[in-house]
Length: 329
Image (cartoon, rainbow, N blue to C red; front, side, top):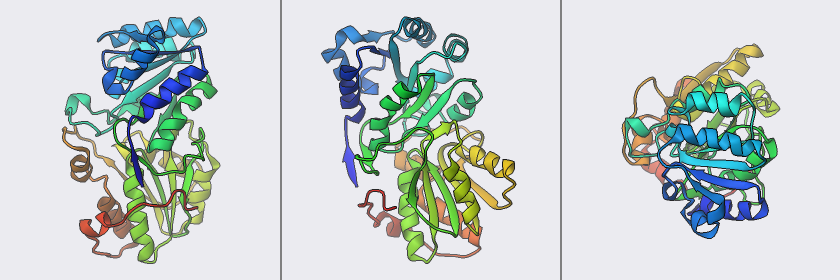
Protein backbone atom coordinates (compact mmCIF):
# COMPACT_ATOMS: atom_id res chain seq x y z
CA UNK A 1 0.00 0.00 0.00
CA UNK A 2 1.32 3.42 -0.96
CA UNK A 3 0.86 6.62 1.04
CA UNK A 4 0.59 9.75 -1.11
CA UNK A 5 0.60 13.43 -0.26
CA UNK A 6 -0.77 16.61 -1.86
CA UNK A 7 -3.21 14.52 -3.89
CA UNK A 8 -6.03 17.06 -4.01
CA UNK A 9 -3.61 19.96 -4.44
CA UNK A 10 -2.15 18.47 -7.61
CA UNK A 11 -5.49 17.19 -8.84
CA UNK A 12 -7.41 20.48 -8.60
CA UNK A 13 -4.67 22.37 -10.45
CA UNK A 14 -4.70 19.86 -13.31
CA UNK A 15 -8.49 19.66 -13.34
CA UNK A 16 -8.93 23.44 -13.50
CA UNK A 17 -6.41 23.56 -16.32
CA UNK A 18 -8.69 21.30 -18.36
CA UNK A 19 -11.92 23.10 -17.43
CA UNK A 20 -11.81 26.88 -17.72
CA UNK A 21 -15.16 27.36 -15.98
CA UNK A 22 -13.81 25.98 -12.67
CA UNK A 23 -13.38 28.41 -9.77
CA UNK A 24 -11.94 27.60 -6.34
CA UNK A 25 -13.49 29.32 -3.33
CA UNK A 26 -12.19 29.00 0.22
CA UNK A 27 -13.43 30.18 3.60
CA UNK A 28 -10.09 31.23 5.12
CA UNK A 29 -8.78 27.63 5.12
CA UNK A 30 -7.15 27.46 1.70
CA UNK A 31 -3.81 26.03 2.81
CA UNK A 32 -5.51 23.63 5.24
CA UNK A 33 -7.69 22.40 2.35
CA UNK A 34 -4.77 21.93 -0.06
CA UNK A 35 -5.51 24.84 -2.42
CA UNK A 36 -2.60 27.05 -1.37
CA UNK A 37 -0.64 26.09 -4.51
CA UNK A 38 -3.74 26.63 -6.63
CA UNK A 39 -3.95 30.22 -5.37
CA UNK A 40 -0.33 30.80 -6.42
CA UNK A 41 -0.60 29.21 -9.86
CA UNK A 42 -4.11 30.29 -10.82
CA UNK A 43 -4.83 33.43 -8.74
CA UNK A 44 -7.47 34.69 -11.19
CA UNK A 45 -9.49 31.52 -10.53
CA UNK A 46 -9.16 31.63 -6.71
CA UNK A 47 -11.62 33.49 -4.46
CA UNK A 48 -10.81 33.85 -0.75
CA UNK A 49 -14.15 34.48 0.95
CA UNK A 50 -12.96 34.95 4.55
CA UNK A 51 -14.64 33.42 7.58
CA UNK A 52 -18.06 34.00 6.03
CA UNK A 53 -19.33 30.61 4.89
CA UNK A 54 -22.96 31.68 4.58
CA UNK A 55 -21.93 34.49 2.26
CA UNK A 56 -19.78 32.06 0.26
CA UNK A 57 -22.91 30.01 -0.51
CA UNK A 58 -24.64 33.03 -2.03
CA UNK A 59 -21.59 33.92 -4.12
CA UNK A 60 -21.27 30.33 -5.33
CA UNK A 61 -24.94 30.24 -6.34
CA UNK A 62 -24.62 33.46 -8.34
CA UNK A 63 -21.46 32.31 -10.08
CA UNK A 64 -23.03 28.95 -10.94
CA UNK A 65 -25.99 30.74 -12.53
CA UNK A 66 -23.52 32.66 -14.70
CA UNK A 67 -21.96 29.43 -16.01
CA UNK A 68 -19.02 28.98 -13.65
CA UNK A 69 -18.36 25.78 -11.67
CA UNK A 70 -17.53 26.76 -8.07
CA UNK A 71 -15.62 24.27 -5.91
CA UNK A 72 -15.98 25.35 -2.28
CA UNK A 73 -13.21 24.47 0.18
CA UNK A 74 -13.40 24.44 3.97
CA UNK A 75 -13.74 21.96 6.82
CA UNK A 76 -16.82 19.75 6.55
CA UNK A 77 -18.51 21.09 9.68
CA UNK A 78 -18.48 24.62 8.32
CA UNK A 79 -20.08 23.60 5.02
CA UNK A 80 -23.28 22.02 6.36
CA UNK A 81 -23.71 23.08 9.98
CA UNK A 82 -23.02 26.81 9.77
CA UNK A 83 -24.60 27.40 6.35
CA UNK A 84 -27.58 25.05 6.24
CA UNK A 85 -30.22 27.64 5.35
CA UNK A 86 -28.14 29.31 2.61
CA UNK A 87 -27.01 25.94 1.30
CA UNK A 88 -30.59 24.71 0.97
CA UNK A 89 -32.24 27.88 -0.40
CA UNK A 90 -29.43 29.26 -2.61
CA UNK A 91 -27.89 26.05 -3.99
CA UNK A 92 -29.98 22.90 -3.42
CA UNK A 93 -33.43 24.34 -4.15
CA UNK A 94 -32.44 25.81 -7.57
CA UNK A 95 -30.37 22.65 -8.15
CA UNK A 96 -27.16 24.48 -9.08
CA UNK A 97 -23.89 22.72 -9.98
CA UNK A 98 -21.87 23.69 -6.89
CA UNK A 99 -19.32 21.28 -5.40
CA UNK A 100 -18.95 21.42 -1.61
CA UNK A 101 -15.61 19.88 -0.65
CA UNK A 102 -15.65 19.19 3.10
CA UNK A 103 -12.26 18.36 4.60
CA UNK A 104 -11.49 16.46 7.86
CA UNK A 105 -14.77 14.49 7.78
CA UNK A 106 -15.86 12.41 10.75
CA UNK A 107 -13.15 12.00 13.39
CA UNK A 108 -10.11 12.85 11.28
CA UNK A 109 -9.01 15.95 13.20
CA UNK A 110 -7.64 16.76 16.67
CA UNK A 111 -9.85 19.87 16.60
CA UNK A 112 -12.35 18.45 19.07
CA UNK A 113 -16.13 18.48 19.30
CA UNK A 114 -16.49 21.76 17.38
CA UNK A 115 -14.64 20.32 14.35
CA UNK A 116 -15.97 16.74 14.17
CA UNK A 117 -18.48 16.22 11.37
CA UNK A 118 -20.04 13.01 12.62
CA UNK A 119 -23.64 13.69 11.50
CA UNK A 120 -23.05 15.44 8.15
CA UNK A 121 -24.23 12.56 5.93
CA UNK A 122 -27.42 12.16 7.95
CA UNK A 123 -28.24 15.87 7.56
CA UNK A 124 -27.23 16.23 3.91
CA UNK A 125 -29.17 13.13 2.85
CA UNK A 126 -32.42 14.84 3.74
CA UNK A 127 -31.82 17.79 1.38
CA UNK A 128 -33.55 17.36 -2.02
CA UNK A 129 -31.24 17.52 -5.07
CA UNK A 130 -28.14 16.98 -2.90
CA UNK A 131 -25.65 14.24 -3.87
CA UNK A 132 -23.05 12.83 -1.46
CA UNK A 133 -19.63 11.32 -2.19
CA UNK A 134 -17.31 9.94 0.53
CA UNK A 135 -13.59 9.49 -0.27
CA UNK A 136 -11.69 6.51 1.16
CA UNK A 137 -8.35 6.57 -0.64
CA UNK A 138 -6.21 8.40 -3.19
CA UNK A 139 -8.08 6.98 -6.18
CA UNK A 140 -11.36 8.23 -4.72
CA UNK A 141 -9.85 11.69 -4.16
CA UNK A 142 -8.57 11.79 -7.74
CA UNK A 143 -11.97 10.69 -9.08
CA UNK A 144 -14.06 13.14 -7.06
CA UNK A 145 -13.59 16.27 -9.18
CA UNK A 146 -14.58 14.63 -12.45
CA UNK A 147 -17.62 13.12 -10.73
CA UNK A 148 -18.62 16.60 -9.52
CA UNK A 149 -18.43 17.87 -13.10
CA UNK A 150 -20.33 14.91 -14.57
CA UNK A 151 -23.39 15.01 -12.31
CA UNK A 152 -23.95 18.77 -12.94
CA UNK A 153 -25.88 19.27 -9.66
CA UNK A 154 -25.16 20.07 -5.99
CA UNK A 155 -22.73 17.59 -4.47
CA UNK A 156 -21.17 17.27 -1.04
CA UNK A 157 -17.78 15.52 -1.00
CA UNK A 158 -16.19 14.21 2.21
CA UNK A 159 -12.62 14.93 1.15
CA UNK A 160 -9.33 13.57 2.55
CA UNK A 161 -6.11 15.57 2.87
CA UNK A 162 -2.50 15.09 3.91
CA UNK A 163 -1.08 11.56 3.78
CA UNK A 164 -3.74 9.45 2.03
CA UNK A 165 -3.42 5.69 1.37
CA UNK A 166 -3.66 4.30 -2.16
CA UNK A 167 -5.95 1.29 -1.70
CA UNK A 168 -7.34 1.00 -5.24
CA UNK A 169 -5.92 0.77 -8.73
CA UNK A 170 -5.28 4.31 -10.06
CA UNK A 171 -6.14 3.02 -13.55
CA UNK A 172 -9.67 2.15 -12.40
CA UNK A 173 -11.30 5.47 -11.40
CA UNK A 174 -14.15 5.44 -8.93
CA UNK A 175 -17.59 5.66 -10.54
CA UNK A 176 -20.56 7.59 -9.21
CA UNK A 177 -23.23 5.46 -7.49
CA UNK A 178 -21.16 2.31 -8.02
CA UNK A 179 -19.59 0.36 -5.15
CA UNK A 180 -16.13 -1.16 -5.44
CA UNK A 181 -16.09 -4.94 -4.86
CA UNK A 182 -12.99 -5.73 -2.79
CA UNK A 183 -13.56 -9.41 -1.96
CA UNK A 184 -16.17 -12.00 -2.83
CA UNK A 185 -17.79 -14.30 -0.29
CA UNK A 186 -20.97 -15.96 0.88
CA UNK A 187 -20.68 -15.88 4.69
CA UNK A 188 -20.78 -12.17 5.59
CA UNK A 189 -21.73 -8.99 3.74
CA UNK A 190 -19.46 -6.09 4.67
CA UNK A 191 -20.03 -2.50 3.52
CA UNK A 192 -17.42 0.09 4.48
CA UNK A 193 -16.76 3.72 3.61
CA UNK A 194 -14.24 6.51 4.15
CA UNK A 195 -11.16 5.79 6.30
CA UNK A 196 -12.83 2.64 7.66
CA UNK A 197 -12.23 0.71 4.43
CA UNK A 198 -8.49 0.38 5.06
CA UNK A 199 -9.23 -1.10 8.50
CA UNK A 200 -11.93 -3.32 7.00
CA UNK A 201 -9.50 -4.66 4.37
CA UNK A 202 -7.02 -5.51 7.12
CA UNK A 203 -9.69 -7.32 9.14
CA UNK A 204 -11.05 -9.13 6.07
CA UNK A 205 -7.58 -10.45 5.30
CA UNK A 206 -7.44 -11.89 8.84
CA UNK A 207 -10.97 -13.33 8.67
CA UNK A 208 -10.28 -15.13 5.40
CA UNK A 209 -7.35 -16.87 7.08
CA UNK A 210 -9.82 -18.09 9.73
CA UNK A 211 -11.92 -19.72 7.00
CA UNK A 212 -14.64 -17.08 6.58
CA UNK A 213 -15.61 -15.73 3.18
CA UNK A 214 -16.52 -12.05 3.17
CA UNK A 215 -18.25 -10.10 0.40
CA UNK A 216 -16.67 -6.69 0.99
CA UNK A 217 -17.92 -3.63 -0.87
CA UNK A 218 -16.38 -0.16 -0.53
CA UNK A 219 -19.05 2.53 -0.77
CA UNK A 220 -18.30 6.06 -1.96
CA UNK A 221 -21.68 7.35 -3.14
CA UNK A 222 -24.07 7.76 -0.22
CA UNK A 223 -26.76 9.62 -2.19
CA UNK A 224 -28.16 8.34 -4.46
CA UNK A 225 -27.84 4.82 -3.05
CA UNK A 226 -29.23 2.60 -5.79
CA UNK A 227 -26.29 0.46 -6.92
CA UNK A 228 -27.64 -3.09 -7.64
CA UNK A 229 -24.43 -4.52 -6.15
CA UNK A 230 -25.72 -3.66 -2.67
CA UNK A 231 -28.84 -5.81 -2.99
CA UNK A 232 -26.92 -8.62 -4.73
CA UNK A 233 -24.45 -8.68 -1.84
CA UNK A 234 -27.19 -8.70 0.81
CA UNK A 235 -28.99 -11.61 -0.83
CA UNK A 236 -25.99 -13.93 -1.29
CA UNK A 237 -24.60 -14.15 2.28
CA UNK A 238 -25.69 -16.57 5.00
CA UNK A 239 -24.66 -15.13 8.41
CA UNK A 240 -25.60 -11.48 8.15
CA UNK A 241 -24.51 -7.93 7.38
CA UNK A 242 -22.01 -5.48 8.88
CA UNK A 243 -21.57 -1.81 7.99
CA UNK A 244 -18.53 0.26 9.01
CA UNK A 245 -18.33 4.05 8.71
CA UNK A 246 -16.60 7.18 9.93
CA UNK A 247 -19.94 8.74 10.92
CA UNK A 248 -22.73 8.39 13.44
CA UNK A 249 -24.59 5.07 13.26
CA UNK A 250 -27.68 7.26 12.85
CA UNK A 251 -28.36 8.44 9.31
CA UNK A 252 -25.24 7.23 7.49
CA UNK A 253 -24.12 4.11 5.65
CA UNK A 254 -25.59 1.71 8.22
CA UNK A 255 -28.98 3.40 7.97
CA UNK A 256 -28.83 3.31 4.15
CA UNK A 257 -28.10 -0.42 4.08
CA UNK A 258 -30.82 -1.01 6.68
CA UNK A 259 -33.32 0.82 4.47
CA UNK A 260 -32.42 -1.37 1.49
CA UNK A 261 -32.89 -4.48 3.65
CA UNK A 262 -36.28 -3.26 4.88
CA UNK A 263 -37.52 -2.27 1.43
CA UNK A 264 -36.55 -5.67 0.02
CA UNK A 265 -37.65 -7.69 3.09
CA UNK A 266 -34.19 -9.19 3.70
CA UNK A 267 -34.46 -10.86 7.07
CA UNK A 268 -30.83 -10.98 8.25
CA UNK A 269 -29.01 -9.54 11.24
CA UNK A 270 -27.42 -6.12 10.67
CA UNK A 271 -24.58 -4.81 12.86
CA UNK A 272 -23.71 -1.12 12.41
CA UNK A 273 -20.15 -0.09 13.31
CA UNK A 274 -19.74 3.68 13.61
CA UNK A 275 -19.84 6.56 16.05
CA UNK A 276 -22.46 5.95 18.71
CA UNK A 277 -24.91 8.68 19.70
CA UNK A 278 -22.31 10.78 21.51
CA UNK A 279 -20.03 13.81 21.00
CA UNK A 280 -16.51 12.93 19.91
CA UNK A 281 -13.32 14.51 21.22
CA UNK A 282 -10.19 15.41 19.28
CA UNK A 283 -6.92 13.48 19.06
CA UNK A 284 -4.80 11.59 16.53
CA UNK A 285 -6.84 9.61 14.00
CA UNK A 286 -5.61 6.09 15.01
CA UNK A 287 -6.35 6.85 18.67
CA UNK A 288 -9.85 8.11 17.87
CA UNK A 289 -10.66 5.15 15.60
CA UNK A 290 -9.76 2.77 18.43
CA UNK A 291 -11.51 4.84 21.13
CA UNK A 292 -14.76 5.07 19.20
CA UNK A 293 -14.63 1.50 17.88
CA UNK A 294 -14.23 1.93 14.13
CA UNK A 295 -10.95 0.02 13.72
CA UNK A 296 -10.09 -3.47 12.45
CA UNK A 297 -10.30 -5.12 15.87
CA UNK A 298 -13.79 -3.70 16.41
CA UNK A 299 -14.87 -5.22 13.11
CA UNK A 300 -13.57 -8.66 14.10
CA UNK A 301 -15.46 -8.44 17.40
CA UNK A 302 -18.61 -7.64 15.42
CA UNK A 303 -18.02 -10.70 13.23
CA UNK A 304 -17.56 -12.85 16.34
CA UNK A 305 -20.94 -11.64 17.58
CA UNK A 306 -22.56 -12.28 14.21
CA UNK A 307 -21.33 -15.87 13.86
CA UNK A 308 -21.27 -16.65 17.61
CA UNK A 309 -17.60 -17.70 17.66
CA UNK A 310 -14.26 -16.43 18.98
CA UNK A 311 -10.96 -15.77 17.15
CA UNK A 312 -8.99 -14.02 19.93
CA UNK A 313 -7.37 -11.66 17.44
CA UNK A 314 -4.84 -9.18 18.78
CA UNK A 315 -3.93 -5.69 17.62
CA UNK A 316 -0.38 -6.85 16.88
CA UNK A 317 -1.69 -9.57 14.54
CA UNK A 318 -3.79 -7.04 12.64
CA UNK A 319 -1.02 -4.47 12.55
CA UNK A 320 1.26 -7.05 10.95
CA UNK A 321 -1.10 -7.46 7.98
CA UNK A 322 0.16 -5.37 5.09
CA UNK A 323 -2.13 -4.22 2.29
CA UNK A 324 -0.15 -4.65 -0.89
CA UNK A 325 -2.60 -5.66 -3.60
CA UNK A 326 -4.96 -3.33 -5.44
CA UNK A 327 -8.45 -4.58 -6.20
CA UNK A 328 -8.06 -8.31 -5.68
CA UNK A 329 -11.47 -9.02 -7.23
